[in-house]
Structures are given as structure tokens and as C-alpha cells.
Amino acid sequence: MIKNLLYNFSPRRLSILNRYYKITQFYSFLKSTAYKGGTVTAIFVLLLVSLEIFLLDFNLLLNNLVTMYSPKIIYSVFLLSETALGLLPPEMFIAWAAKLETPWIALFVLASLSYIGGVIAYFLGTRLFLIPFIKTHIETKIQKHIINLRKWGGIFVFLGAVSPIPHSIVSLASGLIKYNFKNYLLWALFRYMRFIIYALIIFGIF
Picture 1 (cartoon, rainbow, N blue to C red):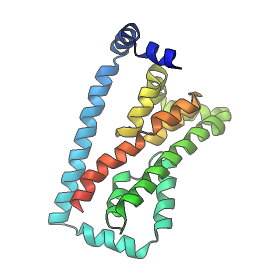
Picture 2: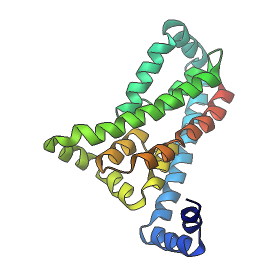
Picture 3: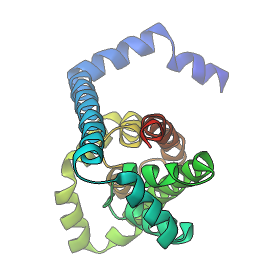
Picture 4: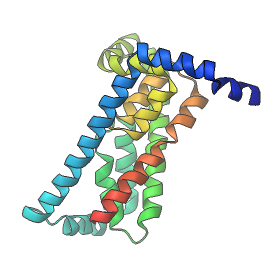
């Protein structure tokens, strides 16, 4: 194991990887993703602040959510969303967590549910698409993600976990192409990092 680890970080290995990433335009993709991620985050924060000032009382809205719906319902909806192609933005649920008595515990639960949702999506990718016409339809819809996953493997799973790239779609693609499950689980752990970063911003607002 140590021998393999030393090989992975040897100058020759790193040089080969660097050349490969240049050829496959990974660095350009990474730069574009970082720019989009920063832009999306900035727009989201500005939108929240603007709506709070000029239109809506978000604190009141979130307090009503806390009062009207039990955490079990909110968590169930979030898990469904994180499994089914990320239908609802996680930021909305992080803002909800900010209004609870134990926001960081709620954040950990949300991050764990997002991680579990990705795992479920992975297995959906391996099982549901045994039906040929469904497999063909899904492959067409997420072809770009499949191509990137085949080129960059775990690095792309990492980007799906921390960036605006939908984590559930990357997980679905991972299952579809039978990407190594253990490696997927390890790279997907960075999903927790995304929740912590967003919480540091959103908790400060609410």
C-alpha cells in the first residue's frame, strides 16, 4: 500500500498526470467550474440579501417552515431531492437549518442525507438502466457528465461533490459506467466540505 502511495505521488507519475490533464483540457474545465461556482454563490448571496431587504422577510419565512413542518418531513424531502437529480437547491435547506436550535447538527444530517442520496443514485445507475431504452435515454441526457467521468474519474466525482455540478447526476453516471464503488465513496465524502463552506456563509446571513 505504501509502495503504491509513493508511486502515485512520484515526480514521474505527477508529470504524466499533468500532461494528461492538459491534453484532456481538465485545467480549463476546472477553471470554468470554479468561475461558475463562485458566480453562482455570489448571485445566491446577493439574491438572498436583496429579497430580504426589498421584498421578503426570509427570517419570518424560515421560522414558519420550522413551525409548520417537522424536521423529519424536511429531511425526507431533501433526501428525495438529492436522489432525484438535485431538484431543490441544498442552500435552501441549509438556510432552514440555520433557524433550528442546533444548526450544525442539522447541517451534518443534511450533508449525510446528501451523501446517502448520491449513493442511492449510484445504485440506481447500476440497476435501473438494465432496461435498454431507459439506459439509452439517460445516457443521452447526461452524456457530457459520463464523458468527463470516464476521462477524469475520481476527480470529477470530487467536483460533483463540491461544485455546482449536480452531485446526484455525477453519482448516477458513476453507477451507469460501473465506476469503482469504493473510490466513489471516498471522493464523494467531499460533499461534507461543500455543506460546511455554504453554511459558513448562510449561517452568517441568518
